[in-house]
Length: 142
Image (cartoon, rainbow, N blue to C red):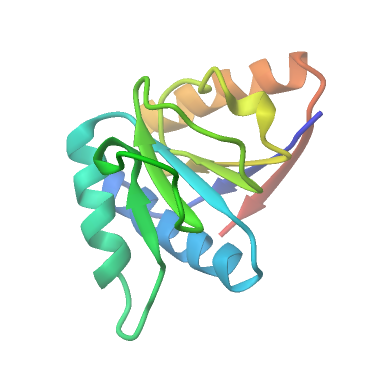
């Protein structure tokens, strides 16, 4: 069973989720972990791709988008959406409204929850699904 961490953010909006995902991916990368970030759409993937280069002065998070890759994924951080094929990595950062079907292949999953009512409601649903599947759940207020 995976460990699922729910990060409760004080801020609202998709940009807050993506910014925190960048910081979390950077921390995991610096700890020599591989990361996959799953987003809801290709436009979200494009925004996250750009944000990983610009979210902080001096930041460096080597990454690649699965949709643009025509071969083996070499980067420690990957970004995917929809039906993009995803190999298991050390950490899955889920920015989707649902649990990705491949989430059980990851030892750790990070769920990012903003203060938006819709985001909180969808996150509660995912929390209940993970709990019913027997995963270890942790909640962090950040």
